[in-house]
Image 1 (cartoon, rainbow, N blue to C red):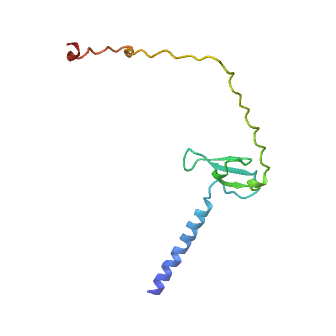
Image 2: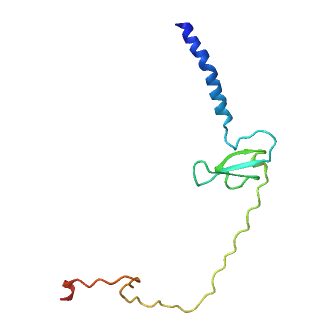
Length: 124
């Protein structure tokens, strides 16, 4: 009995090793080895697998960073913040305008349609 079980494990072990090697070989595109240009990949809002890669890190989107090759994103100099927006108030006026009162009117009839006649009870 023990010899049979040992023989089964001996047949399954190469299959298990082959499966493990195949699973490790199918890494996502983000994880690469070798000398390549640095890539910084960020997840998109489109779907679960939507990933876009850039040559430089995108500051302000650190929480969407999926993976990178090359130097760490914090090693790049952060861009200067934009200057604060200058707000301008409108010119002051010394008068006011009242909007016209709403006048109830029948709704317009779309082209190609007819208006239904009023109910009989409303005519009497």
